[in-house]
Length: 255
Image (tube, rainbow, N blue to C red; front, side, top):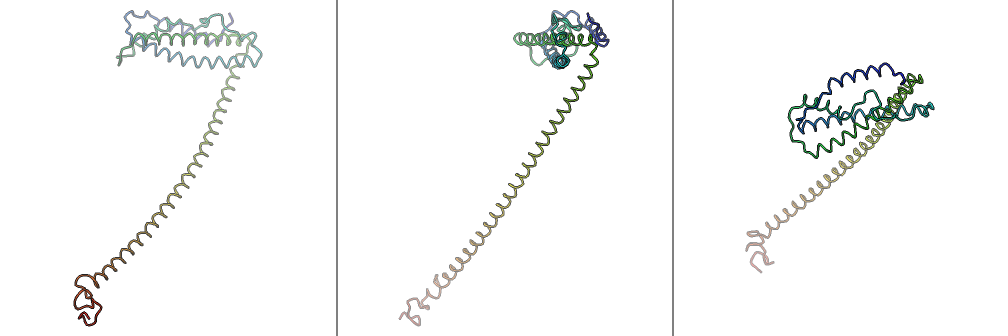
């Protein structure tokens, strides 16, 4: 067995001690709700750890390929449980159940048998993938460490991280700049549209006012004409009385 970095061995020892304390027998009367809650929490935690492990695994493989170490360090471990911190699914689930019982109170709705079967299958699959990935990470780390390149790998990995972060920040800045330019164009377009709208509204108001003036003048003229007609020809008007020359004769006598 290749000598492991001290921090790896220390962490493995701590995990082993923690596991021995927490992994007590799961009570036989665990309720379906407690079991489902434990499975949900376990799957979520394992998924989060799996994402990190896969990322580390990819980093190690990239370093191995870059340094032509694939023949000696690029293989896979002989077993899914080959790493120091390996636990079986049942061991991990017992810890999750004990934790769930100590932290959770009541549940809104009871868990069904179908839910338990589905979540057990999902969680076990996630857990198995995590064990495989962790074993690969440990296998490659041990191999690199044995070749006295582990410190070099850590420096290279940190440089890769910084480069990735810089690229991400640059991309975000470009996207932000692009969005800013698009926002300026949009605001300019909206301002132009608003200006056109205001001009259109002004024209409509002016046209309405002109029409109102025309209507007022027309109405006043018609009222004046009606008044004059009524005064001259309406009932009791001069031309509609015997005193007026109604029949075209002079003196009002009708001849």
